[in-house]
Amino acid sequence: MAQTENSSAPSDRARVKRYHHIASYDLEVVHAILDAMPLCHVGYIHNGTPFVTPTLQWRDGNRVFWHGSSASRMIRTTQEQDVCLTVSIYDGLVMARSAFNYNINHRSVMIFGRPEKLADDEKEHQLRTMVDKTIPGQWARLRPVTTNELKATTVLTMPITEASAKIRTGQPEDNEEDYTFPVWAGVVPVRMQILPPEPDPRNLPDVAPPPELSRFHIG
Image (spheres, helix red, strand yellow):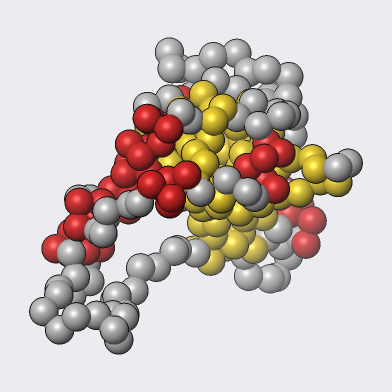
């Protein structure tokens, strides 16, 4: 994918070495993938052992944010080292004529950097941003957070300045001589599906789902 005016020369560790033809360093591409998938994985080293922790991420401008318990290993360790934050979306199984040409259609992002801890006066604002990115306006409907809850939560952030994306689409890419081999090839699309909400049986009888759930086309 060609670079655009929103692209910058990637660092050595962010530069895609293999399958570089499906790589992009365009910030709009990186932002779109982050916005499409809130689940991320944060990779770091703790006491000489590599760990990869799944958590929720959200983007505000050209920064990525995530949160966790202030006492957690991931939160404490990642403030002292560079990390790699990844987001991946599985879009389809690419069935080729050779097992060595099997692939997946996907969108993925890798971001490198040193996380920064948000100050207390910024933390609540970003937690509200996280909640309202899932269901607009939901923060205002919820029971207000307490001082102890905010104290027990840490929000980390990194600028999205050292990042790369990969996007693979389309049909299998077989060896030319394999196109005459008599086996089916093609793509099996994969989609993340949002299903109808399942109410908590302890809901009060007069409460209704947020009206914004209708944007998910669920009744």
